[in-house]
Image (cartoon, rainbow over all chains, first blue to last red; front, side):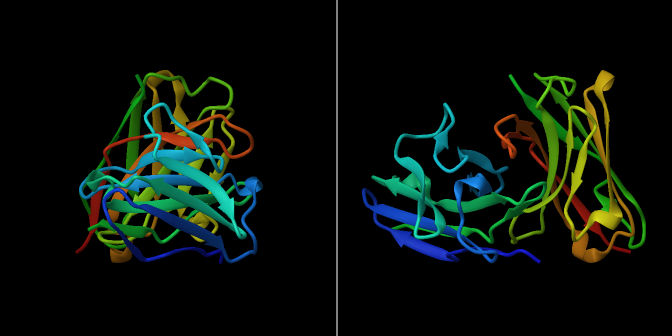
Length: 109
Length: 122
């Protein structure tokens, strides 16, 4: 059973920078896993932010960026805003199946 | 614009079969590269990918649930149907359908429905 691991929770100050990571139990995450990142606020459906490691949608704020970092997928928020407080999920592709991470609860305090 | 909406029962009994319908607009499931996926989320827990059906009727299922899932499409009605057999209380969750856009082997899930909460209880 493949497991995708994220930090359970992180706290960041408004205006600060924070990096969320996404690791795979199968080894290093590469671009071939097409990492995706989603934001979910309470009572709402997930919203796609990043696809295929670092690609943004037209609606993705510029302060969000995706990358590969030390064998993991990473989502960096620069200049965090209070409205960025949410749960963040990564999604990895395993050749015909997808696995979500357990989510990171981001608190802006 | 692309929209999706899930529909189906809000309550099912243990051992029953769940049938959910995703009705969408703004795209065609006969367009090359397009797909519709199903994802669920138990209350207070993480997202879990369940299944995906492609424009060419190819299908992919979560290995852990494969024996219980079936996904079909009706292109003329712009609908995708997910069935899950032998429902259990642990299957209580909000079920989402999502548009899969073409991009490389994986594609990505860019537009999501609002979700529908299904409770499994006797």
